[in-house]
Length: 167
Image (cartoon, rainbow, N blue to C red; front, side, top):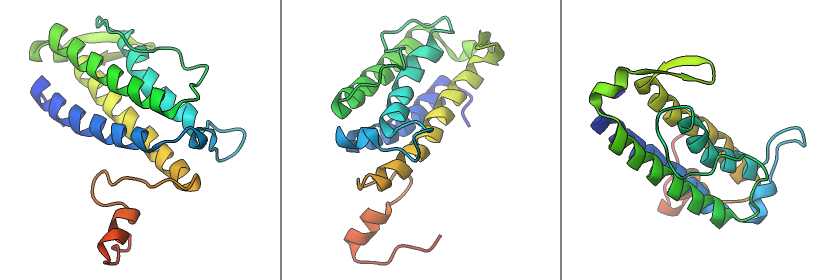
């Protein structure tokens, strides 16, 4: 947990880098991967992860240039990845330019919930982590290599020639 903007940016940058690693692995073909026709596709989840930054920010006093339309889902994995890079950077810059440590306790109405800026920043990080978990499952189903985020992935362990620990 963080209590300062410096602490937030350390965690945000680590988690945003992890999300970027996932998005960089996607292919145009993999975007249509789904568990069932009633569930979101890999592309839809990836694009939602991008647009959520702008959508959530639009409910605050922050202004930034980031996509906010969840639909239609782009058909280019590179476009999704590049859009995430742009949105995460725009968000970081907006927070740096408009908030200070003193603003972390300010409360805003976000989708009908009263959240402090600290809670909002925490939510944004947790939201990305949640959807990364969904994406990694769909990536494996699509035959993509999943990069290690908090340690080596199954594929990265295999490249070392050692057996991965049993979980």
